[in-house]
Length: 128
Image 1: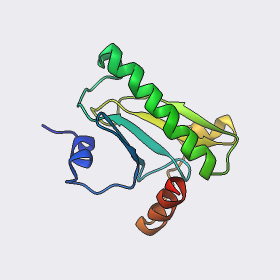
Image 2: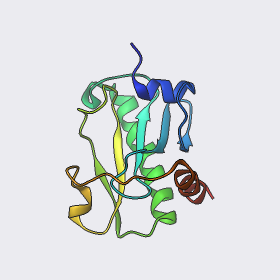
Image 3: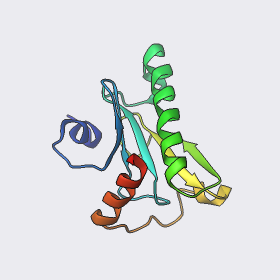
């Protein structure tokens, strides 16, 4: 069965794309901790990030780095925090979160309720 992320990659479920190449896809989290919270995934469906093949793993992190630089340039923050939790969706993914303090990375914090229109604005700003 395809993961929700595979359905996003295939276009079955809409997303606010931040970056894409042949192997990877980055899009805004629809339940973000902070505005600009981006998910980076391999297009090849693999549940656990440490099961991603070595060459693909290295390329995934280089892709995530390029995405983080885009987000950081567009969203006011001190840093881009990085997290890999791996329990919420059975598809390897990296969270890139604009942060100003360590507390901004707490996944127990309430998620933001952001409209699709605002998500589109944020994506456009990052992609400008």
